[in-house]
Image (cartoon, rainbow, N blue to C red; front, side, top):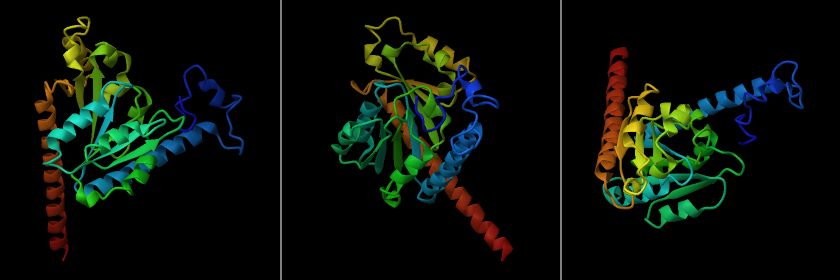
Length: 266
């Protein structure tokens, strides 16, 4: 866990930052819990600002989250190969260290901004804001944000995205939604990735994965796919195209309404 956002405060040590606790106050005398709340508030404020940037330019922002190794980068590579001629795509990559994933994306002719978080186990809105200023949003249709591989903290930090897509890979097991409910409750879409391994990993049940998600009262769609073989990719690509079209339609309606209001006021 990281030391930058408060996600290192757990039920086991929370008493330390409560009134009377040994770490109740920071070195400069402020209440530790208030500091953490302020950090989250500032994150939400910056996330709203990021969303304004995306909306201003009509750019769909998709936050990809999963455990490490679930196939986020491979999915992006397969997506770029199929949609790169129809849509202008950019990627923001989040990892603790290295530019490995960003370099993979750049090999497909797509701009990729690497964020190295150091000890932080998730991206936050401030990091994404800095990355946005390195992109020409006016020339883009979609920005994929590949979050740090982690099924806990990333779900708690709004980045300014329009939708959250969660990958659950077959080797991980079908009970991940039950074990990590905060993450999977935040999903607008769940992708069961590496489904080419289903014949050899018979313990994974796609029905069980769906059942665990529904038990969280999340009605999000669940797609089965393999970025390696291409099976199931069409359904995902159609969803991306439809999401981009819906955003464009919504922003168009808002523009029409604002023009009507201005006319009525004049």
